[in-house]
Length: 343
Image 1 (cartoon, rainbow, N blue to C red):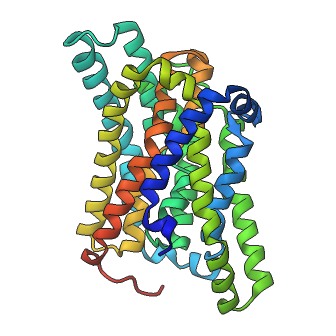
Image 2 (image 1 turned 90 degrees about the vertical axis):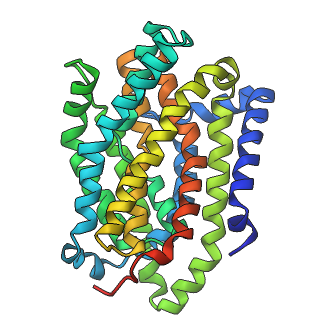
């Protein structure tokens, strides 16, 4: 384990600080970088995500993927938690904290703004992670083939389930799914890196050459993560400094939700005796969010400067440090799970 991986939480904290300072001192630079986007997907962030997930995509073996149907338990847990539990716990926690604890009980958040915050948090709860889960899977030494299938199946469900669940929980009937964001994310964060990994396997051929090359490019994954954090906090520096109290209040239920969903999926996998290489990534998929989709829908429904949009942005900001804490916990509890077997 290199110095970056060993002290990853320290580097991320420094990256958060660097982003805030950079976004405050050099707003024009970050504004320009932030404008390079399409369908709410920033292309600079997209390139950095490629760097993060490319090493894992090289590990995917399609001859092994076809045998995953023999191990359905991990998929059952992931689908159940992501679509039958996660959206509703998020709505419950958002209403409890924002409307009541921070609203009517303490008066910290007005009812009108609180409703917008709740809407943004609900949108986060209905969008399980697509891209970053490959990073968390890699950091927990997850099964690359199984992670790919888990993400792909969840994306297929998202196509048909996102709009009706979001509409039900938001209490509106005109939820518009930004299909361009959804499909572009699948292409950018799954198809292209997957093809790059497949091409790399074809070129290198031998497993030893693949491992050597993978070891050399692995630092790019950590570098991509650090730079992503710098950019995310740099892009949002004005909002963070303008709304520090509200951001902290929104972050509290989001953090509880993240830990809760991970705990449910991870413990369920443990009770079903799934190997750690399946359990850890399975817990990460629901715990982290497809924030590009949530941000896009929040902006389309409520506006760029709405409370809903701000809530989805807070989700982006808290995700990396909280997920890294869950990664550390998953790695510490690895020996409690059975050893993975071939096939």
